[in-house]
Amino acid sequence: MIDNQKEHPTDRVIRSIQAMLHDGTISSGGKMPSERVLAESLGTTRGYVRIALQRLEHYGVITIYPQKGIYVSPIKPITLDAIINNILRFKEHDIASLIETRRPLEIESARLAALRCTPEDIERIVQAHENFKQAYNEGKPTLEEDHLFHLAIAKGTCNTVLESLITLITPEIITMNKDFKENYSVVVKHSLEEHRQIVLALQAKDPQRAMQAMDIHMENSRKRRIGNPVPQTAHTSNTSEETYETDTHAR
Amino acid sequence: MIDNQKEHPTDRVIRSIQAMLHDGTISSGGKMPSERVLAESLGTTRGYVRIALQRLEHYGVITIYPQKGIYVSPIKPITLDAIINNILRFKEHDIASLIETRRPLEIESARLAALRCTPEDIERIVQAHENFKQAYNEGKPTLEEDHLFHLAIAKGTCNTVLESLITLITPEIITMNKDFKENYSVVVKHSLEEHRQIVLALQAKDPQRAMQAMDIHMENSRKRRIGNPVPQTAHTSNTSEETYETDTHAR
DNA sequence: CCGTACCAACTGGTTAACCAGTTTGGCCAT
DNA sequence: ATGGCCAAACTGGTTAACCAGTTGGTACGG
Image: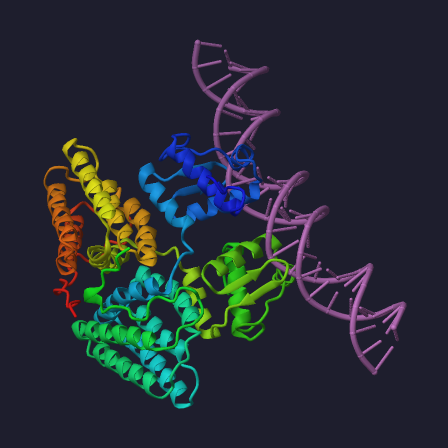
């Protein structure tokens, strides 16, 4: 409300809609004012209102019916408020949170893939593994082959949401890891072996083993990253990161 | 490529960019044609190109520099291709996948909250729990109070990504569960007790116990849902789903 | 008094024109 | 031949006008 002048018009619109939701000007399940009315009452133009509404629709807050109107989802204002707050803060992803969140997703991905993947999925995963190996043997960067291997597994889960979420955080992790120099000799070799264990578990259709192998891989990846040089991205999360158990992260 | 006439212009643009990436017309880390050039060469207008580019930027595929140009992220085409495929299929979320993916996220959320949540976080969580209880006692619907409880926990994780992802799937789950009649008497009472166990674990700062309590809650929620009448959403996932083995998450 | 047909106002969807920085290439002075 | 400068072309950002389908009220005919 204070620095309204500086932030992007689209965010201002979203914040205003949030406020209108809060003070009851618009209510759950009800109809919203038209784009034109919103634009005028918020002192902006329709274009910005339009983009803001599309974002809100993308996150399930509203539904837009062409030539009819805009309706708020039948979800309580308090819940919508939390969702909108999340929309506004969506860009604040730090590398520590990304890696931390990736772990349970990948473990579940391994479990489901072991349960459900078809021979074709296995083939794709093995192929991705081979590509990784080849890049390693040729002394080329392997960061992306690594992630493609994981994406291939996610594809075998038959779970559209899980695949979406893993794919969603992948580019962010790749970008933030680009700064780290990859040790082609030792580190990647370990990664390869861990991948091999995952492949074996998947081929054996053994979910428990797949989870375990993936968990080990995630944990070692984290350690390997911490051992690497730190880039200048400001978020230089303390390299003396505690092992998970003692992690109290007191604020 | 076939039904290009029917799908939304924005999706067509994204698909075309994907193709250009594939055949080398544009390359990783390189500069893309300007919005105008893209619009003309794709036989559409700038507005659609604009929206498509914003979506691609949102997912980390490109970066837009005002008054300068559009640059492709320095990520290999093959990886970008996978990400773009995901963007195009983003809407195909089914309820089974949502519930399935929610489990590991919530378990990790409980673990991290137990490790890191502040007294203020605890207070918010307890308050959310009380609100749930009150709604139950008053015989009112509790679906959203339930989710607000989980969002309060996610807020206590100090993990922006995890909080984002949980918030992201929440409205979809709420909407898809709206059709189910909630049994105010027995079912919700069980849910309340499970929540109480989670609260106790968090107050005790015991991550293992929190994980376990959350896992039980997720599993029971799934069972309770399956026991309820099935709506007409087609995706009537097999109820004979394998039982989840105990979490070997312990490390 | 009721039902129907029509028209005006309003909806979101779409397009094109305009704006202010940035880049670039050529011209001119040195 | 070279260095600097200026204007034209081009960039994404923004605005406003136009389009087609929907709705709701009203006037007219029964």
